[in-house]
Image (cartoon, rainbow, N blue to C red; front, top):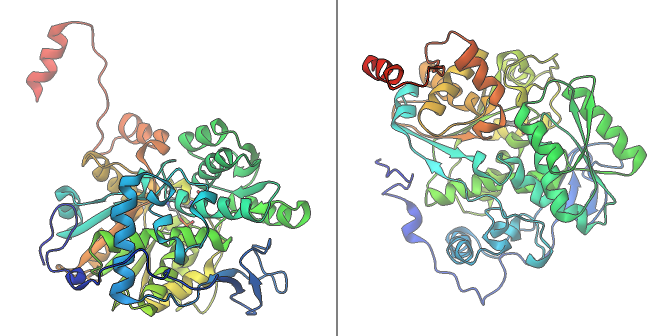
Length: 454
Ligand code: F0G
């Protein structure tokens, strides 16, 4: 199968799409509800709870089966895509054009920048480096605050306003906090963020404080921050917006919806993503489960969750057939995924199991090499994002990814999130791909000497 550089395939099944009449019935008839994945207790979609008050389990949003299905649903979403991207209203968002199966709510009530509509890119250098000719990267770093978190946050903060939350709170390795700070500012809600002191990349800390969140630097790691946030939610009545919150998951589902839409609804063989707290892995699994059930796609891609070797409790569990849940003290240069006790473990196990997926690790050196290749291709991404491309290379070497497989790797965050790691690599380090700047005297001879060397 050949692919154009915008990622569109030439033999897609979209040609058989039905047409969509916007004056006809809505895509769904009734409201979704929240349900505990453990005890199945139900809560209305407007309940304040973000964690089951009966058993402490994780809640998920259950959508009634849409009135449209298969090609009619695809046609409806394609209609919203075409009309609203031009209109530049809240429905121009790559999250809210799927509103009826994310969170049905009036467009006037949305807290949206807008977000999403991120590019799906092909770069020859990445295809060559990974030895996967049909590799595309979905660049979520093009979101308003520079990471995929904006997709979940627009939904969670919209929901926080909807249920009258007095203030919002999260634990973060830096991207969730940046995103929350921005959306809370937009909504006029007070925001509190807990981040591990000294372990968050410079760009992220800068964003979080500049957008105006009350920023608490916890002397501990991310896992300590998350434990404290859960306690604060219960004891202080703050609204929790970590990816434990089911509305975050709903927004993050749209990464999968949108990338499939960009591929004209043809299903790639693999979707590869970095994995830390496992909210995104869980969201991808839910998106695929729903799309298959509603007849939007007719087969599933395999999910590959990539962890950094020093922060790989999920990979350890996968290696034992998910018979035991592992927890570790995490270490990695990719601070975004430096997480030892991922909160969405159960949901992510389901996502990997249902998609015949895999979980593997890559070393910090592999992450940094992949990042240098992504950056030098002109695309750029933060270290955690590079884990997905390093993972593609590893999976191709192992033979899991075959030569002709079509693969989408998700780049989760922007290159400028973590300038410190770039400086360490290119200026301090002795890496083969290092490109240190050269200080010169202010003379043309100094320049000529260097140009001649090229
Ligand atoms: N990539 C980036 C850039 C991230 O910021 C994160 C998570 C992940 C991947 C992993 O996603 O946690 O859903 O498995 N960052 C969180 C944060 C933890 O606080 O910003 P996950």
